[in-house]
Amino acid sequence: MAERINAQSIGFPPRKSLLILFSMISTLFVFSWFFVLRSASSPNFIENSLLPSSSPRLFVIAVDNNNSDSRDPNEAESSVTNRAILSNGDEESSQDSSSVNCKYEGIAKPLKVFMYDMSPEFHFGLLGWNAPGKSVWPDIRTSIPRYAGGMNLQHSIEYWLTLDLLLSEHSDSSRGRTAIRVRNSSEADVVFVPFFSSVSYNRFSRVKPPSKTSTNKILQAKLVTFLTAQKEWKRSGGRDHVIMAHHPNSMLDARTKLWPAMFILADFGRYPPTVANVDKDVIAPYKHVIRNFIQDSSSYDSRPTLVYFQGAIYRKDGDGLRKATRGMQSSKFCLNIAGDTPSSNRLFDAIVSHCIPVIISDNIELPYEDVLDYSEFCVFVRASDAVKDKFLLNLIRGIGKDEWTRMWRRLKEVEQFFEYQFPSKPNDAVQMIWQAVARKVPAITMKINKSMRHSRSNVRREGGTKSIPSPRNFW
Image (cartoon, rainbow, N blue to C red; front, side):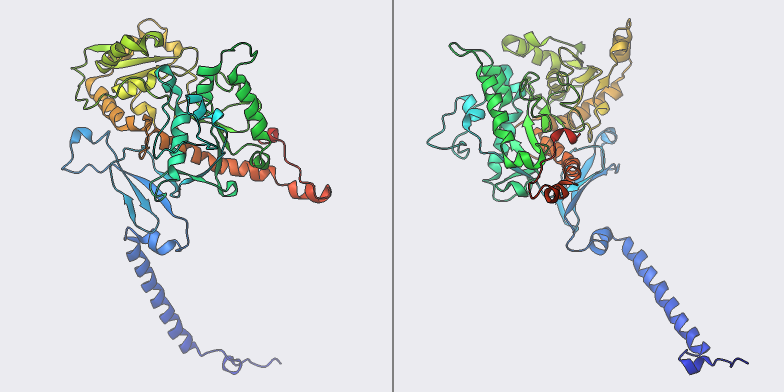
């Protein structure tokens, strides 16, 4: 017969002791949950309690739609207050930046950009700048080369982005900057190619005898040779390179050879989808040629013209530019119709004139549309509807004063996103473009890492010779 087991003889505590221990644990459990719930009511609970001190610094643009009694009720629907908040609870900015109508999280650290020290013939030399001695870059602390005037300005993004990177090396700190230049390419998020392709096309496309080839074509060929020979290009197949080709006719010869790179474009109108597409490339705004409407206090009733449109030939120069400025600033709506490409700087002239854009372009791609809702300040019309009898006019007339006023206010809030300037300012066009580039970096990194999955095994199999994956396998 089996012996009865005495719990005390093998080290188990008596039942009374177990009950006391259970009561104590239950009491501690209740108190711990009370503490957690109380702490959770603190605004800094997540930042101070859940994130380790070594966590990367994040910022959150938090949209505040709180309609307080002290606020103008007419502005409650269109105005938002955004604050950049660091993960350690510090407030970096509480100003009304009118940024984007969404919640966006990103790394607070600036984008690290490696820029090639290319010959001035590719960049400022195209603007007539003569490099002193063996200098590659102008000393922007003493003088800044002027960009080509007139219609050239609308595609001048290459000028502004390059200046911004150069300035980042002379700034006291990276605080408040969206992108900084780094000298070690292995530390960089992206590799920037400082080729002023729009200037090259606009000013050097004509063949000058006795030469049989234009300077523009020669520079593109030299660019391809230079880039494909660099270790940075070979390391990624060019995928992490940023190339500016804002003019739709720029880079006509080189684009099919450098297509794995990220292009900064005006639109995709003259590109096959295998060369340029919204997944890998960035759409940047034109630089407006119409003057900003400073201290615009106009209203629906004070703008006598219902709809305004003027062709590009007559709008961008001389007396036509002055007339267009007056016309847009005195109109309620401005037509933006697709021409030889889906986009034009007419849209951005309308924005800075606070004239509600009416966009009739089915294939248009817009800057920063992954974070910016254009329907808040633009009217979109399908081309098939626009040609219907009286459809467009009835649609525009159906937009009442209150709705127009809301869109007009939103235009005034977002116009800063389309402003190129030097030095750049928070959320201007320069920094918005860098932000758009930064949002592409995770996808670039993933594609590069995937392409390298079998590279190490190839090295061992091929006796130590590392094979560079073909760029055509990246997409």
